[in-house]
Amino acid sequence: MSTYRWVWNQNDSLLGWPGKQSSRAMVTNTSIPKLFSPHAAIRRLTSTAPNRVAFAVSPAAAQIGSFIAEKPYTPPSWACDLSPVPSHSFTLGQFPTPIHKWNLPNLPEGTEVWIKRDDLAGMELSGNKVRKLEFLMADAVAQGADCVITVGGIQSNHCRATAMAAKYVNLDCYLILVTSRLLVDEDPGLVGNLLVSRLLGAHIDLVSKGEFSKIGSVALTDLLNKRLLEKGRKPYVISGGGSNSLGNWGYIEAVREIEEQIQLSGDVQFDDIVVACGSGGTVAGLALGSQLSSLKTKVHGFSVCYNPGYFYNNVQGLIDGLQSGLNSHDIVSIEDAKGLGYAMNTAEELKFVKDIAAATGIVLDPVYSGKAAYRMLKDMSNNPTKWEGRKVLFVHTGGLLGLYDKVDQLSSFFGSWQRMDLEEFVHAKKALVRCSA
Image 1: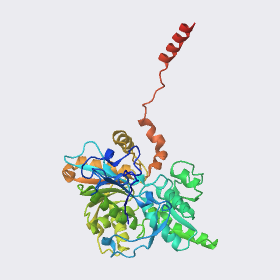
Image 2: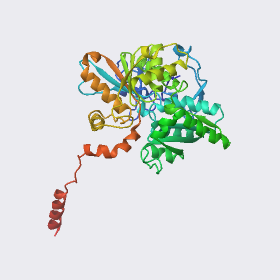
Image 3: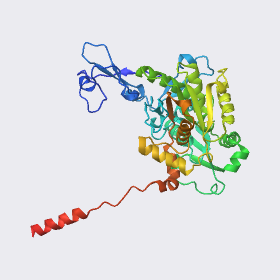
C-alpha cells in the first residue's frame, strides 16, 4: 500500500527539493498544482507558518534499506474479495511512477492524452514487468527456490527484468529464449536486453520459433524444470511475461496507485486507459482493478502478437484465477496492433517512434508501447467521434532496450549531423599569429 510522509527540515523548508531554500520560495498561496508526479507532489497544509508546503516522499525513496526489501502485502479494500491474495511482495521498482500530459499532435477535438511513465520504474527493471515480479519473486523466495525459470523472445523485456530481479533477491536465473531457425545454433550476441541478461549471468537456452510453436512454453519450462530438479536445484517457474494470477496483482496495485494520484490532483478523471497487450497480465490487472475500484475507466488493450480472441480468452483465464466472477468482454476492449507480427515493424511504425520522440520527448519501444500508441492514434484519426472530449491515460510499459535491436532499420530516418565548421576559428588564429609577429 502506498503511503506518504511529509518531510521538513528544522528551518521550516522542504527536504529533497534541489535548488530551493524555503517553502515560501517554492509555491505561492494556491491549491494543489496540476502536477501528477508523486515524487514531487505538493500539498498546502493548515499551519501557523504562512504558505507552508509539504513534500510527499514515498517510503521506498525515504527509508534506507526499504528498496529490495520484502514486506507484508495488504490489498486495496475493493480487491479483498479476490482470491488468492498474496501475503508478501518485494520492493523492486521506483513507485509511484509519474503521470503527466502527453502533447500528441492531431488529436480529436477536446481529447486529452496523459501518460503514466512505468518506463521510469528503474533502469534495469523499467516497465510493466517489475510490478508483477515484486509478487512473483516474493513467492519464489517463500517456496525456498534457489533459481527461477522463464521464457520469452530473444529480446524479451520480461526475461531481462526477471534476470535482474532474481539477482536482487539472490536467485539464479534460467532463460529460454526464442529466436529464428537460422540463428538458433549461434551465439545470441550482446545487443539490448540480451546484453543486460548476460551481464547478470543468466543461463540461456535457445529454441527456434518453430520449436516453440510446436512444443509450447509450458512444456519447455517443464522440461528445464525437470532437468534442474534432477541436478538438485530448487527452481521456480515464472510464466511468459510474468502473466499469471499472482502476477495480476502487480497491476491491481497499479490501479490503487493511479487512484491515489487522481485523489492528490483533485481535478483529473480518466475516461479511458490504453496499454499494449503482449502476454495479458498487465491488461488483465488494469481491467480488473478499474472495474472493482472507483476508476471505472474503459480499458483498451492493443495486442502486439496474437489476435483479440486469444487475449479475451487469456484475460478470462487470468481473472478467473482470482475468482473475480467477471467476464473479460465486459471489462476490456482488445484491438489488433500486431502489424507484421510480434517484434516486427513496418518502416511507418518505426518512423512514428522517431517522430513522437522528436515531437514530445517520449521515447517509445518498437515492440509494445510504440505499436499501441501508433494504433491508438490511427484509431483516433479514423474514428474521431469515438474519442472526442475524452481524457485518455496511456500506460508506457517500458522496453526501451528493444530499440537497440532496430538500429539498422532506424538508421535511414536520421541525417541531422555535420562536421563542425572551424574555418572561422582557423582564420582568427592565423590573424592572431600575424599580429604577434
